[in-house]
Length: 300
Image (tube, rainbow, N blue to C red; front, top):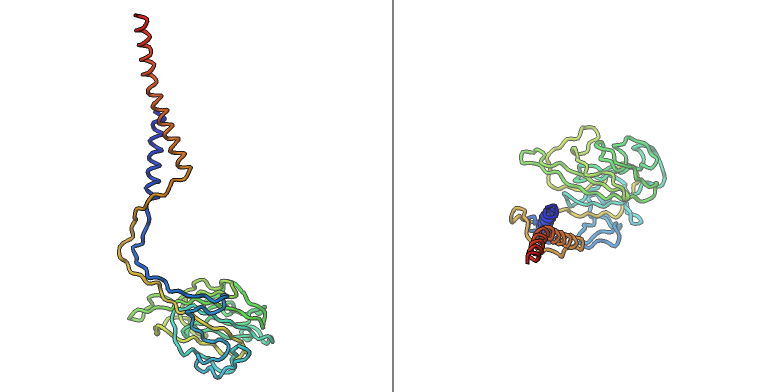
């Protein structure tokens, strides 16, 4: 009986495993083919679908760009903030910047500038190399909203890289916030902001709070009186993957793949156990028949 139970258990396990392996999950969504994007030969180079805002030659993509100096492939603030003529919403933004080589001042008075997303939400630019200040005002912070996760500054005069992923806020018809804005920031390859939820536009004097605004806005580079340099500025507009649901999610059957050797061995062991169990059941009958034959032969 023990062998018979073993055979039944092995058979059930084998059938359940075969059923599970023969199923494939389908989402029920018909997705469009993602667009083909050719990346740059290095991560700092603009990919094929990028909008290049500054390539080292001129600031024609910015309002008041003529008020800044372009020298040796870099843009240097000379008077007033500059804003892109084109407006953007959610984006992947790449900006390279350098604090002045000559160190002057301290705290917020040293290598200070800023990158304003939609002209409203500031990612702080500051020389934070061995320069103490309040933490929600150092390089990589969302100014007056959160400190960065780390200080990844290079020395003054060396180039820093900001790679920013910005999800623009969405407002309801009545002006309430449907989805807040989010910012992810990688500074010199180090994650400083991890999908941080914006509390509202940046302000020096007011607590951050949302005010309804357009779906897109300019990118602004701040003038704070310090000769911070900028170069290689480009962005990719972010659009969600496109698909439409054709049904609820479902499983479909598929041709079972050949079982691995281990499963074959299990089957062979089960067959052997089955044969042995049958032999054990038949053994008493064989012995009884043999005894009858012996008795009959003696009688004769």
